[in-house]
Length: 167
Image (tube, rainbow, N blue to C red; front, side, top):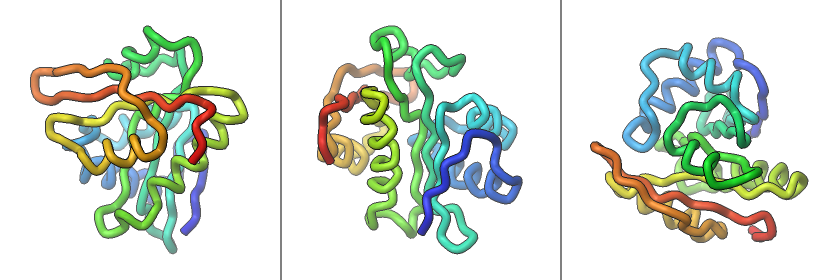
């Protein structure tokens, strides 16, 4: 397995796989109607990483920095409250590759960046529908709850990991 960090739209076959993985997890991520939406997210992101096993994308993470033009309501929660941060907009691991540490590997790469720049990491996790696996993962890795929000069709818990937390 190899983690690849990119700052621009990946090759078409990689973009297709990331898009498919996003759509497989759309119940916990924002649904994207076309690949072009994903391409724009990646181009505007601070960092995008994906996990490659042979030629298959088995996980990915897309993150933004403060004051970006990202339009997510959940991102705006942190943008209105934090001066500097990295926001995990979406992360997904392919179903048959879960619980073997790939999410932790992606976060470890992000922790390196956040530590060097002394930036907290912020994200949200669904509480309706409940994503208990993700909540447990984030709490285990030093994230703390900093807010909640109930939308019409789902609810989230906002989480933040301070810079000085160790893994």
